[in-house]
Image 1 (cartoon, rainbow, N blue to C red):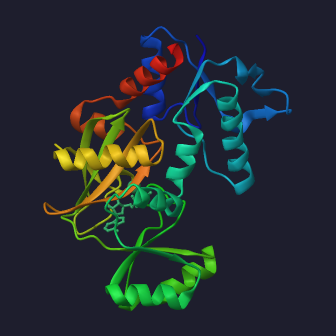
Image 2 (cartoon, rainbow, N blue to C red; image 1 turned 120 degrees about the vertical axis):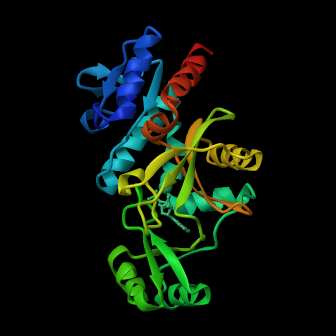
Length: 287
Ligand SMILES: Nc1ncnc2c1ncn2[C@@H]1O[C@H](COP(=O)(O)OP(=O)(O)O)[C@@H](O)[C@H]1O
Ligand SMILES: [Mg+2]
């Protein structure tokens, strides 16, 4: 059985756990950096190894970079999928989840509760969205780890034109009041295998762990579990980290992560999501 794992940093906690977990089920994984892959249009190799020889591929991290190189790496995954290799998460789910605008529509079509959102290149339209709500959260369409997320209120309206000038487009969202925390639910297959609160630093409202948030155990309500499972399914993800936000009365789906880190759940609850993901992949590979 040949199982690969797509990584950019083999020392990352989740990548290490994938490698360790595969060894526990008797598989010596082949780590693959797609940045080193060669496609000669009849073969895809990485450091001399033919990726078509794989039975399954776990995608921890496709990596960033420019448009052409990331499209190239996703196209490699698509070709591997076309040749019958089980890729988890599927490339289309990772791509969809990475795109907050496109995934918003998918989630909306699945009737999930979402914050009001406006995406536009028109400065006037963007400003009137913020003015109607009083304030709004701006974030990059392809953002991650809470980077470049900011609150735009009446005093910071100038940021709208700056962002549109710099990025060409702005993604604006209703600010959902919350008690300084959000929820990250981990879905694997059709189940939620655990969840954490991410507590934002004092007087902050952005709760990503990489922005200083702290993970704490969280028991989801049945409604929240159902939202998380439906959100993962809406994007075709085999597993996902689903961000939920709100208060005791109402929960909104913020986003779905197709390559989530398992560290926070393990730190807070001692639940290792990579084990469940490996089981899912191995079941698919064994048919
Ligand atoms: N609409 C919102 N209302 C309130 N807080 C938000 C909103 N959008 C984002 N946040 C905060 O910012 C964090 C990052 O936003 P998110 O949409 O998950 O982007 P990223 O992909 O960068 O994680 C969230 O975990 C939450 O703490
Ligand atoms: Mg997030």
